[in-house]
Length: 394
Image (cartoon, rainbow, N blue to C red; front, side):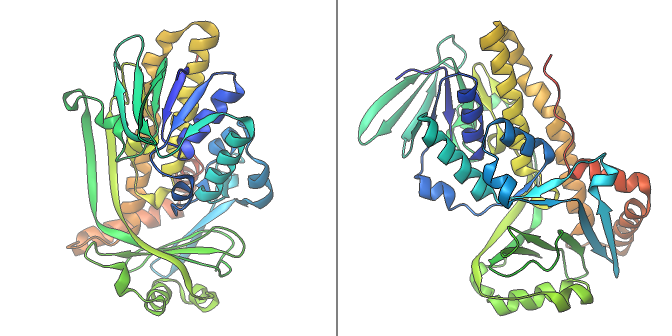
């Protein structure tokens, strides 16, 4: 087998890159370890920045998103008995976010890829990357008991935190930055109407809570829990009771409860690896960085990586400027670290940390009061929440 760009991983970042490249006439093959149903079964968030919405539109996969996505012009933060709305659209110069589930984004991209006839190999086992620093890298894998080889010009590693792509880079070439937080998020998905038409983030003495949504009839709620908690110990009734206790009274009164479709506990971490490229291998998305979900940046950061890599590959193939690909890591990391900072800040001011003393607690409250009581502070939150602009490729 031979292609121009081999893409490892058929999650939303790999599929989006593949669709953009296909539309530009650049041949690509995607290799995925799991089945399509497994990939679609991953329950993830779905708050899309304006930049990602525009990128999906450029890829031609925005029809269902335009019909079913919920455009949000604001977000709310509750703390110390107060509720403050951040007018994202006004404060960011007209930008908004769109609530559209990651599962739906992935489904749209899968269907578009199938419709255009581009190649995706599912259940590709024992994937290995070779000659990454040479002129002709290649990938080997097993499918139905047969060992296959895929020759290519470049490899995009879009296979997540545990994937083979980052592991294929010698450890001594990488620098890892990481922070693991001492709590997780217990999330519940239910077919109940959202308690609010916009997201509500809550800082409460009992811990953080978030009221989110997937559609006008499906809600997603979260509460902060210690890492020692087990999801099987949380009945639906216990979850709803705890959530209500952390929300403002007027919000809790409107909360519609119901049986859970899914419950899970997700640990929180910040993680960045530098550089994001090694020879002709380029890491994108969770393969290179993880953010705590508080700032709604995970999928959006993957999209900005994809945008950067796609535009650099266009320069390489259309203009013969392959040397520009050497800038990939530096361009991506400038935006990544700003998103990491914002996600860390949101996590720091909205969660209760174990062993926090009275001074630190008062500083956290004052930080929220300052940012939410200042036009400049509100604008800072808004411009980060809707997404900082993508860097132009000269």
